[in-house]
Length: 176
Image (cartoon, rainbow, N blue to C red; front, side, top):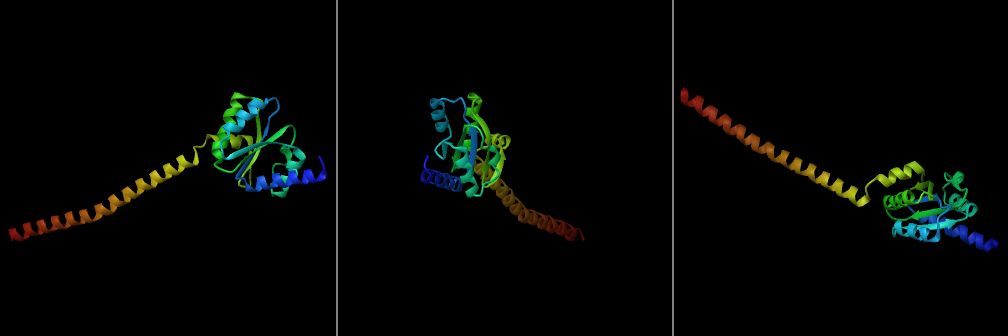
């Protein structure tokens, strides 16, 4: 590859690292072209899976400010650049790796923080962003209902207490 081609490839990879929420490094040794195509489909619309050259990708990652992946650029490497929900793509990688043991998750980065292969698998075990937001909204709605019931109970309890005091006072006043 000529020098301008290499610098263009580094610039493109640097841009992908900067524009991605997450990036996951994998080793794809032993996978067929058909399996790689299936893997790309399983990652979803918000991820791009690219086979890369280690040296150029290491330079691009360093230019993007990611130095925690330097020791993982060895052997045949491919990177999943994730621009959407990282949980969905991590699930796609994990599930594909279960069916195809030749795919090895090396590690990655999420919002600038380095992730080990085990942390990526834990990320895949999380529920999707939409499900977590729905659960949070349900919990907040439940707490609001409890608060409304509490605020409504205080005035009604006060009214019952005042009525009981009036009745008691009326009894005591009638007995004298």
